[in-house]
Image (cartoon, rainbow, N blue to C red; front, side):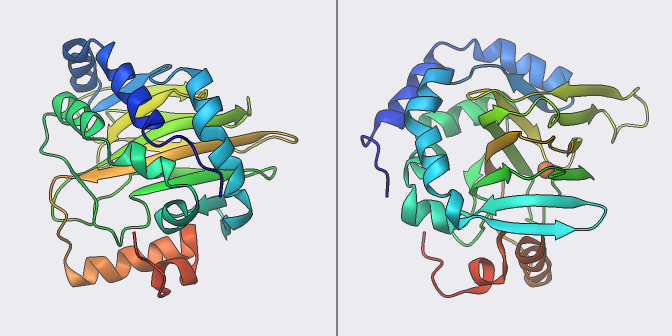
Length: 249
Ligand SMILES: [Fe+2]
């Protein structure tokens, strides 16, 4: 396991948030229908020093998945990150980061339950054609679900996060965005509001993004839990990760 100095990531996150104009970001988030892009939230050098080595260290553990017509790529779940790259959990559990998110979204955010493999995970686009089709990050929780994406590796001009803002609002014209997420760039959105996709990876390219998920109510009905687990097993992390025994976080 690659280790990073305990506290180094949390300290970098605290420092980054200390330099932000949070009222301005909150205004931008709400003006964009609960969507925000913060280029270089963490400096690229911080990501390359502390997080990129962890991304490479868990690459052998990624679970590849393929859903014809919708999705192709690799994922590493929160369980693997907990066991082999806990530096990401240090980021996910940062109280200052949670406070920042709460101030921007004006929502009483909480971390996801330990059994949610998406709570903090890595998405790898490593083979030509890796992509995900348009979707919402639908909440199966009793509360709303918020997604954070952060670029970790972005040697992939073809592989962009594409977003249609206001797609869920028939009164507004849709606004189309195409973003490359450089190491340290952060995207934050309400999962039920942002229609988004990732375009196919080109030959010789590589893109890796960290995803973190927070919710306003971590309870989930039993049928939604079954559906959510099946979706995670098939589309992301594999049956063993989602239903296996070693899921302590
Ligand atoms: Fe998504």
